[in-house]
Length: 414
Ligand SMILES: Cc1ncc(COP(=O)(O)O)c(C=O)c1O
Image (cartoon, rainbow, N blue to C red; front, side, top):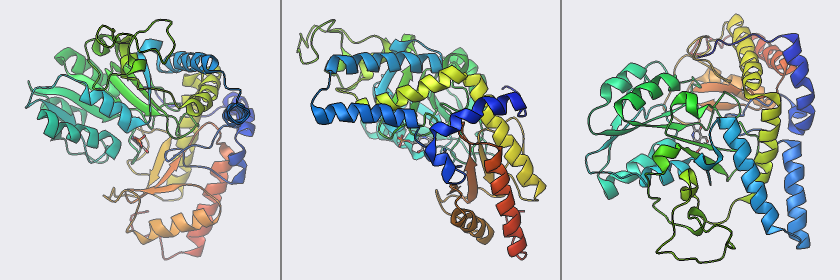
């Protein structure tokens, strides 16, 4: 993993103008991309233009298809793969389910997963294969907020078909060493499936470097666009050996024919690579919004975006630590753009039993900070529209809270 760089002036200057295209950033610190991002003004303008055409009855369907292909190609550049290796889906769960249910299973095959750290989106689709295909799930215990790489590797047996992991967990927000796992999975002939919901658009999501076989993501978080659009990468060699569970007009090759042409369903060949997993018409508004975001990210450079955002998160983590609050897991290579505060990872998705955590959360929220509670921890998550002033503001508020509530701070926060 790349060492995180501290912020320098040049980087700060480069990102300063970006903020003006995120009007929501002016309403107080928005530190909640791990839930959903602020919508990008240029994305909204592009969707508005599409809606205006819908209202006026001037939609040009061919132009929409061309847009889909252009955005597919830009997303492929962002994820460092070929456009044919990208399918549009509805969300992360949908992408994982389309991929998982289309694999050739034999009863007794297994999937390795660290359920304590995965989002339900990357748990249920695998369990859904049990009754239909006899697929077993092997649960790996987490270790201090990490999915332990060596334990995962030790658990692989001759019936393991898939290992699945989140590139960045939604809580505590640690980066997983995907590349190391990918090398081993490839060597052992096991498929690596990655939930990139939290990394795409923020932390570099290089599917080739990861040696991933399938990667699912969506567009409302790091791609600062809309709900209802998912992205599924499937490596060409893997995809082209697969039969999609649902065969669709959009998943087969019908060359230049109109989309409503039936063709010959008995003789049609499957679409190239991941295209075979597509089903019917697209979420055009979602694609249009995401297209503007990806353009911005490619213009800035994904590595530069990662450096800036992780620099902000690290700066915040250092400031919080200096206030004697506990950054979960400390500061190190595992850090992402998500900083969680507190000392114990709980089970409840969006609740805390700790009165300090609840008190600080309510105080920050009442002061206009947008953030989350996840698994008993306060979750602060950063993106390219954040700046140093956001951090100074929140750190000032935490100081004020500490002064107002001197009795607090003795539990898991310290
Ligand atoms: C790691 C992770 N995976 C998946 C999702 C969402 O899944 P879906 O798009 O299927 O709702 C989230 C957050 O909402 C997440 O944090």
